Image 1: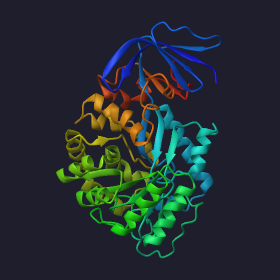
Image 2 (image 1 turned 120 degrees about the vertical axis):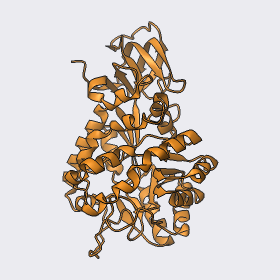
Image 3 (image 1 turned 90 degrees about the horizontal axis):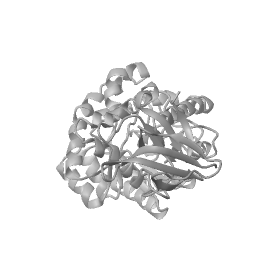
Image 4 (image 1 turned 180 degrees about the vertical axis):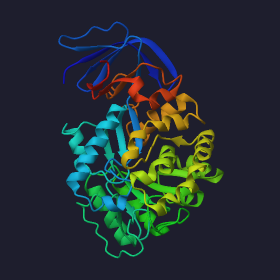
Length: 409
């Protein structure tokens, strides 16, 4: 890969919350080589003028479903995998254009999707995948209606999860995902919105089953992340060794204490509830799922504020499905209602990098880091909602040292 010199931008130092003006960033072989003033471009280097602009670390969305081309996940499980792949490619390309250079898929993506990005077959953010989420019968990833008995867990089916019951079965299912190179294991700890037969306040899997999954992930030097809404489900998962909680809309103060004690992460996904309410039906969300949205919608901001004020490690997530994926960046606007701009941006950079095991590699613009950089025409440390309008404010996306998207005209 050739060298790239980005000239004259103001670096957004997310850790300090400060902006450092007039900086050049020299990139070579996908890494940041030098940061400073008036750097000399090596022979043949491409130059990008960033004067008057801001340099922001590439964004990390820690809760996506890149294969979810429809909000009706039960229907999608029966789609052609080729059709789902085409939808996935479009979803990934759009995410990159919004400034997301890395994503964590928590149900649906597999090693083939990650490889397609790595090898340059598709444009998109780098994908940290967990394969298929693990669900008990009748759980959040069991997408059968009450009258359907047949269950097909075949790997070619484009579903988000696999149904497994009993300690032996969940061990086998976890090992099978880890066998494919999964970066984490996703488990369903409570009911959810998109599933047809479970209650939001249900507890899923036995304690022995959850512990077995955690043990298998630990043995592989990986971790378990858990879908959970209620404090009971969240606390139970944390006590059993789950490292990260998805959603957590109904947590309480005891949950905050456990997050701190266990050094665990929380990934709120507030934008999905807003658009499930306004666009869910149009996007294919079944009627029985639409009725559940209100239970978690109003509590989400309160839970985010509770966790933030309590010092919980909070990453950025969206969890959008189908046609609603275009609203991914709106999560910045929603979180800004209760958090300062710098903390919202840290969730989408530094904390996301820590969750993914990329400390010092991603979420920063420093020498030696991966060269994932956004060039914006406004400062998100002053107003993070500029990232909610990427079409207006994200001028250039640099991924692994290459200009991936460019709106300079």
